[in-house]
Image 1 (cartoon, rainbow, N blue to C red):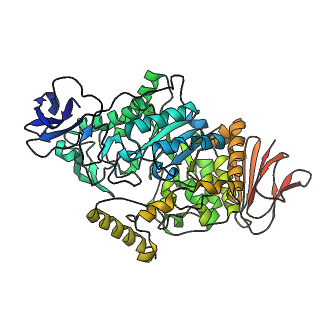
Image 2 (cartoon, rainbow, N blue to C red):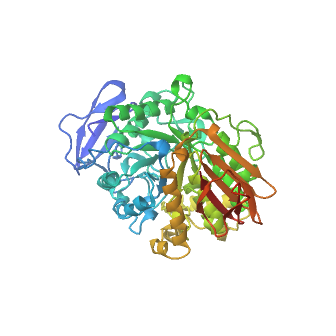
Image 3 (cartoon, rainbow, N blue to C red):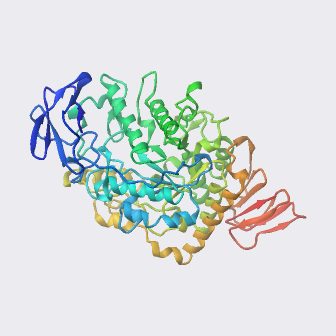
Length: 571
């Protein structure tokens, strides 16, 4: 806390332990405090031009929340000296939300559940945003103190302990970070400098100033933040939220700066590090190398694959699902990266996307569920509440045998009965606005206001907490075993870890509702039609089947697959 950037201030004072100490102006709008660093736990704040004290923009800890004083943080204790990271291209990712993943809703509570993830067979834990946000509960996408792990989850020491515990079990850690906007409550950055701009807008509020006057230090703020999570907290990767909402007209995009910083940390530490983008653009530049005009990120989420799979399993065609037809789109994504590669989109009213090939499928993250596709539904229903468990098993098989990096969402592996709803804990005025906005948003889709859970109601949060007791009961135990077997098959089969899309063959029979996907020696035969299907395959052994009645026929050159089931064969 010995320095703060406040280029427009005429004076800056540090308030330490109730006493004010003047700071000296340095170059570039930076103010410095002479003397030794503060002892861990010491509270402090900054006063600009004699105004009320404000938290440090780079605060490492906010013990009293977004409006309170900042606190100095001591060193963390690590036992992961031998950890060298994970290879993203061969990983299975498990996304979780700290507040609802365990009954305790804390970093410590998550540690208690890590052995389940090891037994499941996943490789990477992806944690939804933990930067300090207002209130006790929330998704984390309205964070405002981007350097401070949420105090209600266990603060800095709690996060460090969780990462260390993951590494001790062979699990990598990806942290979801939000650089496209900040929340409204407790957002004091604009008091310090030109962190925001009115030239652009985002769906969530003011846009970050990545390309206007003063943006050099703003860019440095976010790049330094990314490096902090990688170095001080030892996380293995970052998931960058909604990068399509980042506007940067600079010759060098901020995403390129972030990717370069991540890879420089990897080189300096000898540990694999990576950056994954969420984007709505279907733009391959995100993951192309910088020397051919790309941004150099390591992977991007693939919503097209999800949307096609969701339509195939549920038949739902409202909203953006209206652009998708089902299994044909699944096949298109499996062989071409995503579905929309420049063709017209009815939902958008324009052309969408660019061709993805010849990039590897392992630069895309594929999923049947994630926090958005569950939680952004009005009632937060999981896929298992929208279709049969038999069909969910088909979807899981297509994800976990795909050329993409598979991602699971907490509880998916046992078809959790709990929803994942949108919840907040704002002050009354902001809370009312959020609740009313949520109802208005879904009224356009035909939902009555009383049917939309109130984000501010504590019960909305309580309903979203996983019920771990159901794992061992039918039908959840059967689904959990299915996921374990699929993940084990992927781990043991080199062809399934090969991300080359030109080696994927996908044959669809729309009338019959079948899809046959071949990847080297592995064939996945899926039947979502109403009748048993005889599907032509090369002679191979059935290694996994989601239903009874799967059998070879026609001298081994076909497999009989019952309705709403899938068979995995291997030569």
